[in-house]
Length: 366
Image 1: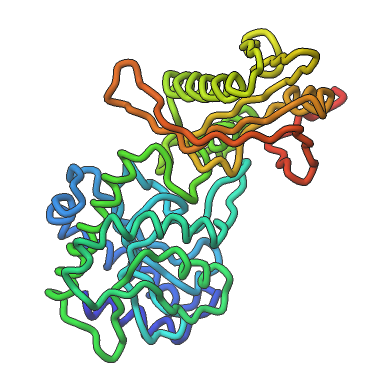
Image 2: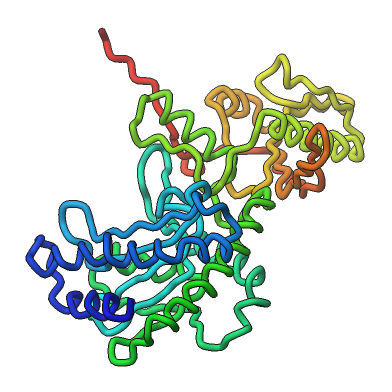
């Protein structure tokens, strides 16, 4: 393995986007030879990751069409992170100047939004890192040679994009490459850390920095309805079930009702028959309230076209209530929603620049 990593670094020094003889060789090493070495350790990786043997995935990429400046080979859970664009995995990354390789505990640095692949915001990546590091530090502190930042010295935007996604990494310099035994120990150490993140992500109702479940659900549904081949299914960031959505909705409406009753409002739940959720009266006053519940931090919520149009008509006698950070007790039967932090905006003025279009209906004229 030490020879393979060193060879890729040497080939990095003559990188070209064209598929030259050197780039063809680099592709064989990252896609096949390093992959094969990793597969030889699949049983040990499965134990370290805490997953079944057939769930251990290994793949290498060096670009489609043009050769990527930063080639990589990753280890991952097939069921959790089938794509390198999302979730958590460990990956060998090779610097653009050929001076160093990294074994990085990494997250996907791109995401699917409305059927399009876009770079994640640096702030979102940092939120995910801040969530992840405390979960693994008790194991990571067993050694002191890991880094929280990597330097790939890449010229391309895609190559630079890997740097802010790193949770932590081990660096291998070309002039001081350790032997294969050390590389194997490092690999299994990083796999243990990845296993801890997988377990924590399985138990989490929301990971800071992720798109809210309802936003992912809406964008996926829009892509499916439009028959997009890029519509995503599965992967990290699981969608909620119908029972979970109902529990979240009930919890948010309950907290909103109590909030307004404490202010002297008479509250009527009209969500089953009206394009808003709560109708409030207090003497001659009236208020039309839209309630949104989410397990996320409430930074984004989904609004239908009807909800937007009606709330604009109701303004200024209207309100938006967001109940965010709701927890889900999946051990309860039926599932139970708990907690939640309420934020109320009233009057609610919906500015156009706060809305993002997910899909359109196109009148074709046929």
